[in-house]
Length: 423
Length: 167
Ligand code: SF4
Image (cartoon, rainbow over all chains, first blue to last red; front, side, top):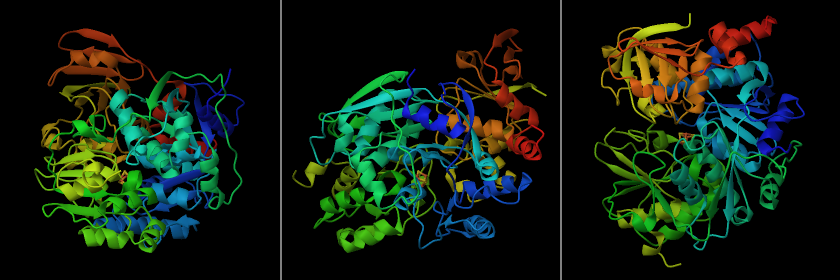
């Protein structure tokens, strides 16, 4: 019987010829990731395990990004736990403030993740790396501790839902974010619970790597264990100048077994907006109505990449942010920050009246740098609009792509890009 | 021990990790900080209202959202003995097992329970009892590998044993 790409990667890392959905395996990990929230908890557990050294200092990656640069004394202490551990364990991939970025933007950019890898991260958006044809999934801190100690993780082999993308977006303002919001709207926040989401079909070739990262990133918002995509020309161009280690490309067999098949037609897809308080509460932009907003955030591991910054700048060029609204733009990494400077994007945003920040998760999880007051509304390019996610439990979050976010920043209400700029 | 008896605290579907412990409290992983802020936006003052051993009965997709282990830890530190849900989000499920918070997936059986009911849960046997109505329900049991982690108490103890070569 044929296997899916997910099953093949899991089998290879468990040292098995074949695995089947439902099977429990112990698999070897290529990368184990932690951040300033989950890392300190993992380090504490690691120290209880009776192991001196991590299994491989090249394969344990620590990134302080959630509350870093440290927002208060307690955060500073959490970052210090990470830093001290990274030094004493002589980790290759520890990224200090000044080099760090949002972990899921940073790892692919630095070539740390390769196609065919098995990655676990104590962060739910670890699923992002599936865009590179890797198996990547979020785990908890104790899982991370066990992986740091043993180089292994226990996993249940997931069933796979196949998402077939057809056609080509008919507007430049339709990107990966709309594909994934549309899917979550269709199947719900537990629509892919415990399962893999495999995105394939000719539609994929019309989506940039940045858009693909966005799609894989939000697989978790449908409850999925991982989101994964086949490796094509675009993937190889992306990895070519970044990945230094040897890797293997896996692809699904034609007779692989899927639990369900879903089709999304990119041609008819419109920008999507998720209303409070679930990412599945989606509407097409033309059905949004009049929703006034107080703040726009463009950034996060979902939409803080170069494509997102360029789209935002394209719409904001020569325009002004609505006087009753705050615009906060946060590039995902220092590399993206620098590229934004070279391309004049930083200037465009600042001239429009926006804030341009150093990379951080910041407002995405209601950490700092743009917390919402009671009754305020934000439109953001992040991934979660749960109650209280960005601040006061009575604030509201709407999720959308960067084009809608930039247009809304100009209009002061949720707006279609076409209201601000012609096609 | 795998049997728990307590009073039911009933919550709905899609209770996410931000509702269990909001990110604004994550700059401090101390048990006291997690305990007092647990489920604060769902049941105000939950930590003060519950009695040790009480049981949380939840709807679908309990614990969806972030990977924060602080969520099951917060529930454990509150004194909740066991979480019963229609279904659990994936990472929450692993985390609960890994830190030794007893959980059980029961599907539609959750509909039989309301706030304040008396419930008995046998996690190993997968048996749920409604003590007021005198009814018994059968739920899923864990596969053997996960039972080993549960038997060790948590994943840390399990790995310790493995490192020493006992498993
Ligand atoms: S940007 Fe937001 S979703 Fe992404 S890792 Fe940071 S807090 Fe999590």
